[in-house]
Length: 232
Image 1 (cartoon, rainbow, N blue to C red):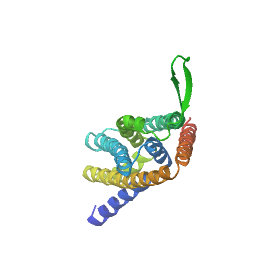
Image 2 (image 1 turned 45 degrees about the vertical axis):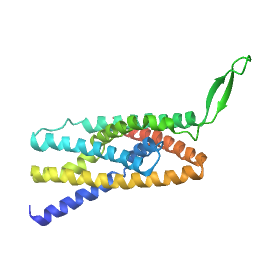
Image 3 (image 1 turned 135 degrees about the vertical axis):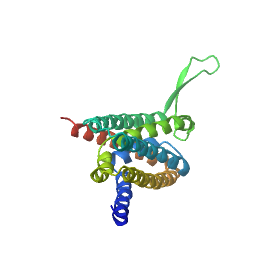
Image 4 (image 1 turned 60 degrees about the vertical axis):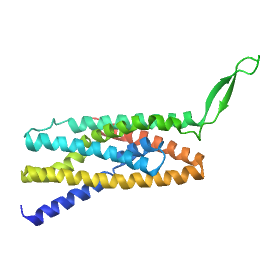
């Protein structure tokens, strides 16, 4: 394989990585998990964790295939895709619950000698809970990214060109460039997500809650479609 062919192959890898990161299930998972976060940097960091998990899985797959000469189980990608679908549904349900929980809580109070009674309070403006869970969600992003690396078209897009050429070094370079494309696209998406989230929540928290609700419903819908599509 000459230099021009390698250049075309690596350019293709980067472009496929950019496109692959914008798959519907990826966007839904990342958007929902990051929707409770505040700030551009926080969202960028979150998306970077997802992309890192995605790239790590592809690298491990490449290690098994090109260095160890092993073949992956035939149904591994299918099972991973089903797992992604279930996780999307769970994420969507969690976001819907979180929107409801942040909006209103019931508190019990005592006033002098009067019996305890309930007060309903809105907590839409409080984000302390989001700060407490941000570290946990960062690990979730890494795990979901790794699972996405196994599911769907990622292994196929990343491995078909290099397996045809039987050149392990080019295979690893291809995987790295593909993953860089995913990372670049996700960093841009994370920055835009954080930027527009700040604008929307500053303008209207009701609209922000509505968007989170729609994202949660969308995640459940996408997960359900994927799950039904993988039934044999």
